[in-house]
Image 1 (cartoon, rainbow, N blue to C red):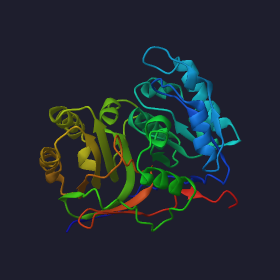
Image 2 (cartoon, rainbow, N blue to C red):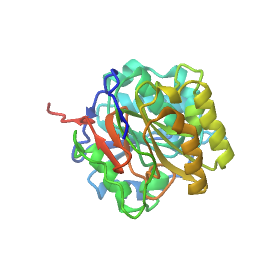
Image 3 (cartoon, one colour):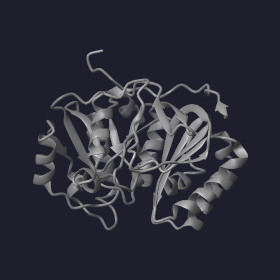
Image 4 (tube, rainbow, N blue to C red):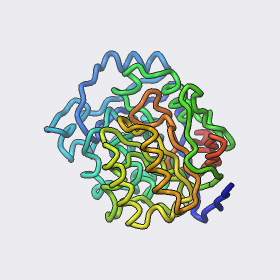
Length: 318
């Protein structure tokens, strides 16, 4: 069994917990979507929260949810609004990489709060990790997941993290109905970081690429055949990213045969001797479990366990 050491990098700062009846903002920083406003408001009210829907949610500019200015303004405004206690994205698609070099990271640092999304939203997770340094959440989108009727564990996982029920030492529960595959056993500690593999690869060579030193890399994807997953992983290998990792957690890779994927994962990561656990239900799947990006975690691949090693949200009264 390989035990990888803790990397010297500090874990990211926790964000204030979502309080009871706290306002949740909805923004659309990527692709457009049609929001059933009444359904969304009632869904959140039934769980004790009001929604604040920002203007770009109702806009469409081709394959984007409004212009870059509109989407960036909503992103900044949601963080700056003192009444907003958490932010969730409407959908993924494409658009967030276009915003990265215009983000006011000082504004984000000064107004840190839970920020949730996945898929194209990965670019924002990576940028916030590198330049703002607080925990964000790879978790459900409003339309596809929360309003899409996904399994109860999607909602339970989402609120458990945002409300501060997941503390240092908590084991992130994975549903037994979805078996995990141990590609390489071992135990490693590091910051959990990553998201959509295509977006991770698209940011390579930019100031927003993943800071991989000592990281437990999380990857997921959709609509990518196996040879393209191979190409994306090869890009990360040739860039020197994989050699800097402490471990790998593989989420849902929708549409790819599981056995073939695990063979590719073994070929790719075996030279590094790091633990690799595959099949975690996060990403374009049902259920879609929330993961804390930037948080210090312990991956026990042989034991099918992911353990939170720090608090990811802080009591607002502290």
